[in-house]
Length: 267
Image 1 (cartoon, rainbow, N blue to C red):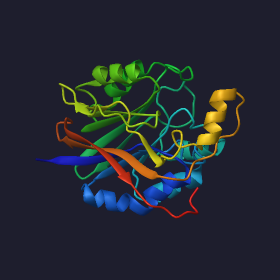
Image 2 (cartoon, helix red, strand yellow):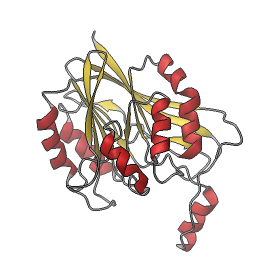
Image 3 (tube, helix red, strand yellow):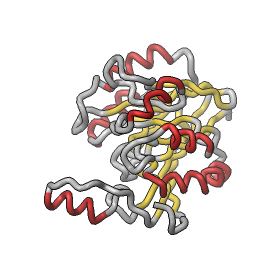
Image 4 (cartoon, rainbow, N blue to C red):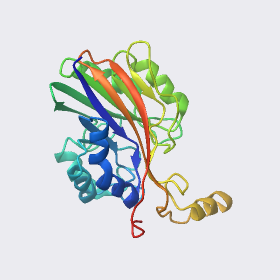
C-alpha cells in the first residue's frame, strides 16, 4: 500500500522541549519510519512564544512544518519569518491582515501534504470562526493535495470534538494542541479522518503544563500574577504517528510517549 507516515509533536516547551527534539528526533523518526514531521512550537521560547532563531533551530533538527497558536505574536520578532517562510504557520482564522499564513503544502515522497493551522474560540481570544475558515481553505486546497493535516489549537474538548466530526472525510487528520495534556481518545472517524483531542506536550513534566510548579500554584491561590518560568525535570515527548494512504484517508493513528534523560544544565 502506498502510504505516508506523519509525526505530529505536541507543544514544544522551552529549552527542555527543544533539547528532546535535538537529541532524539532522528532516533524517533528511524524507529517509526517517519516521512514528515510537524510540531507545534509556540511555547518553544521560554514557554510563551517563538523567535526566528529558535524556529530555525527546530527546522535544523528535521522538523518540516511548525505550527503555532495563541502565543505566536508574544514575540514580535517572528513576524518577518512568518511573512517569508511558509514552513512556519500561524492560525488561519486570525483576522484578515494578520501577517503570515495558516496553510502550506509540502511534497514528501509522492504525496502533497497540506498542513492547516486553526485556533479555537472557546476561552480564547476572539478570532474568526475556525469551521468557516476550514470550509474556505478546503475548497482552495482540495485539488492541490493528497493529504490534509489540521492542528486545531483550542482549549475546549467540546470544540475540538465538534471540529473533528465537522472535518471527517475531508481532513486526513485533526490533531488538537494547546492544553499540554495528551488525551487517550485517538481514533479513526467513520469517513477516514484520524482524530485526537490533544497531542500533549514535549518538555518538562515535573511541572504545571511545562511551567515551574511553585509559581503556578502561587498564581492560582493569590491571583497576583508572577512571571512563569519553564520547569526542568522529567522531560518527555508526546506525539502521534498518523499513517495516510494515497486517497487521503488515515490508515492508523498511534499515540507516542517517550521519557528521556537530559543534562542538568537544560532549563
